[in-house]
Image (cartoon, rainbow, N blue to C red):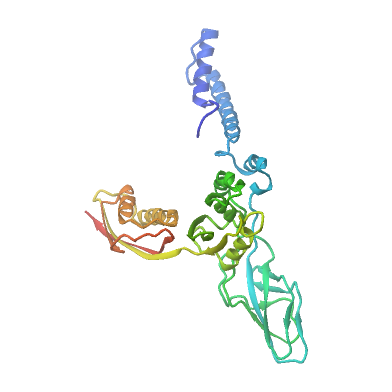
Length: 361
């Protein structure tokens, strides 16, 4: 940690002993009772000064955390507010058991349930005469990340409507997001000055795109023709849902953000999907358990692929270097055999990592 305030406990103790000897003319051994008292006081003062140094550092945006980081952003107004947790959303298809000669209403606020999660419809549904089904948009009862819920997994209803037969989600749930964490918030604050332009700069669009959703961590902007903007978005290890992309487009095209007549398209990057397989050999003197070595390698390789940005390619030499840095003697990359070719809008996605331990040499 950077030190603005010095407060090393050992240094305080050493200074205390030297001052005592200078003032009292008495040498203290480490076992002396007075030396123990000085040692205790030095530890307490060290902790106090460590805390004071941490508080001082948080006066700078790069080191601020939590509420202190929020307070640093207040100077920029509401546009700099930390993103709150968002709600998961899902389309529910609701069916009746028979055709009836009147409208069957599905009340706004109808509850659907999946495990511990409750989804509440945001609109009134209508099944017209001669029809047996309709769809309604529902939202999770509480904001935040509720995990993956796939198509067809929500089949229970709490508030049954007339002639109820079944309900189901035909698409995966658009997962919600947790409150914006300090690292993402700090990065967005660094990009915030670009948002004050009225010329529709690239930095401005990047800032406003991230402002919509805490799930967006990567933004790449291309202009295939004048006044046409293709904005490619991606989250931390996951695609951005269609609902989120529509929300981003709606937000960006409001009059106070859209310069003149820009045409905005929100897209996924082109995914370059690979499966990584590696044979690796250890040194004969290696003492670490093989399971621990493999776990460490998997963690570092996953971190590497998660760090790749839109427009960056996969280079096998980077993988070899990661293994070498972790004490691997030799490795052979079995798949993919060649480096991936990157385009401005491509993103490498590693679907699986297979590590084959081939012995020690």
